[in-house]
Length: 231
Ligand SMILES: *Cc1c(COP(=O)(O)O)cnc(C)c1O
Image (tube, rainbow, N blue to C red; front, side):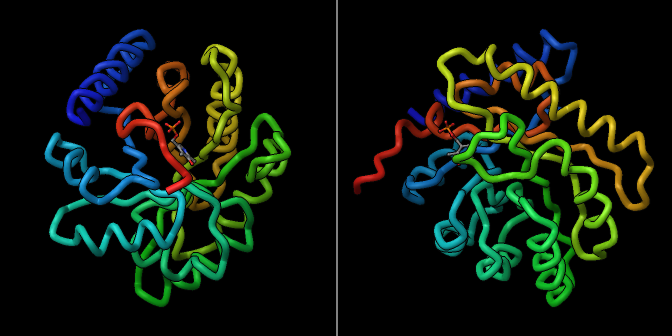
């Protein structure tokens, strides 16, 4: 049952928050509904979940339209191509996967056109995996300084997709590095930059991510079950 799964994840978030001396209310659970039908989103909503994550713009827009009666918040967490930025800006409350200054500029342009200030995160490929998107830790500051000048995006913080692992402890150092990056850049007092969001942790490692300062965890499989990409 989705409601049982949600309750369990929320409980785990609270447990790990307590271990780190944090309040559970500091952490937003994003239910990642990609590949799952709108009916399952409704089921989660009925169990009190309002924030959902999708990694494709098209799928996010479709579910948003199907469920327009419900007060849902959509977060785009997957790679975004600039030719889909306009649609993403129309629907997403936060775009987690900004991996270049030029994409931020494109988002800024479309946000300006509809009078929106778009919340975004910079995606950082902390582990420098070839298969993943994102800036390196060392490229982050220069990108932040450029994005700071864009009036219609608000850079809220950083996102990372840590390596897949059976042992969440292996990703602790990655989460810690991302948090340190945010602390270090905030300390530089760059105009217009005051970041407070760390989007890190998935089904396999969100507990450790919470202990290391995650403000947003993105959990799919534990809530909705395994994804079948062959349907
Ligand atoms: C699919 C996805 C998730 C959720 O992964 P699970 O392991 O199913 O919890 C989180 N973040 C991103 C970027 C994803 O694409």
